[in-house]
Image 1 (cartoon, helix red, strand yellow):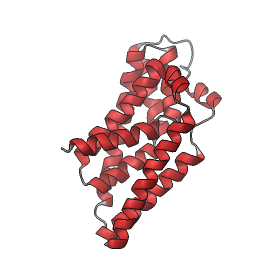
Image 2: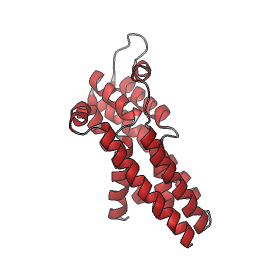
Image 3: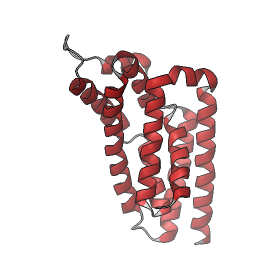
Length: 198
């Protein structure tokens, strides 16, 4: 386990997830239902996605060195472009997805299950999952990358559930997006240089 890798991955994933639709979904769920129930569901959903991303990243490491660096560089560049273009869903669409069907009581099982389901569907193939797979391939350290990515996603979910609106008043979402895109751009350049050097 490498603390520097954990901290690096945490920072990248945290910044990439802040402007995401799942952060908005977590915020909305947290305003409607008990925060702990929402967090348990979202945290479980994120954990499933990190495991899938780490598995995909581990498969990428089977590529020859130069090709791996080229693929990793291209994926980071794609991530930076996606960050700058913006992502996230329509607020009304997200709200519709969060409704509990019927007038059933908001029990722990229903709220946690709904939160898990929202994250599972919304996060599949999402930018942070691609970034996590990419980081797993780059660092060849699935445990450290998995811990950093999971903690980054959980931190965003926790912030969104507890105080997302306050955070967005302090730091504009465009600033967060640009910082995350810049970091991914730098990682893309480093990976592409490594691919050229061989």
